[in-house]
Length: 278
Image (cartoon, rainbow, N blue to C red; front, top):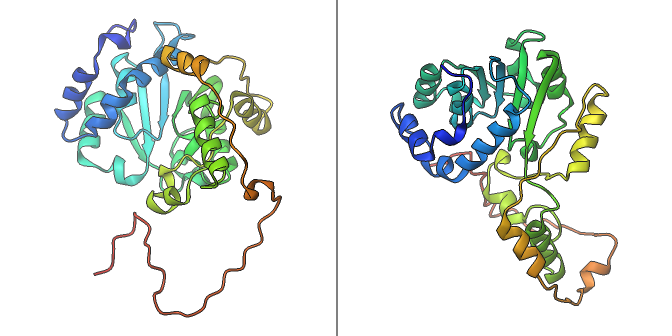
């Protein structure tokens, strides 16, 4: 196998066929995100000698869509996610076909799934579109990542940009219209499983501060921020409208009295990950 692998040589349609040969997969997600997987690969591999064969950990490996590009380039992969996915028959078949090791991560907040990996055994950690979903104190998890990374090893983070102009526009519209504040909506909280939310999106300075607080051993000087031409044009052509602030915007605190007037209906909403009682 050639190590001089270009991800653009492998199309989304070819990748989908590859996974469908292993069983079912999330076709919509693969087709929507394939270009991101390709650009992530190019960013991750740019500093790497093309003859090198890395030990790679893919955290939140999902259906192994992202992992496939690294496997095709000859790298050794360990892929970790919640047990519901890594125990899925088609994911197991795909991992076997690409020679990847699968590990369940039942308690990400403790890093327990990583304890199966030896100290200093990983060259590259892929943490692609995961950090924005973390809804717990991450320090125990990152201690495990630190333990398994070899000196000189790298963590490649990809995540939405919190200061992306469309995101700011959405947040400001919610705020100034009185429909809501910053962050995810109440409907999102109720209608989506815990790890489906973007609980916290980061700016580049925040991400650098995040890893600086974790350890002075981390260097975060290298980065990329992909920009689409359509976004540049939209931002340059945007005209901000003045919106009169409602009274809620002027208040510095919320005092809320929640009174249980009776106990007839119970809690009438169930989290989406718990099946309804018959």
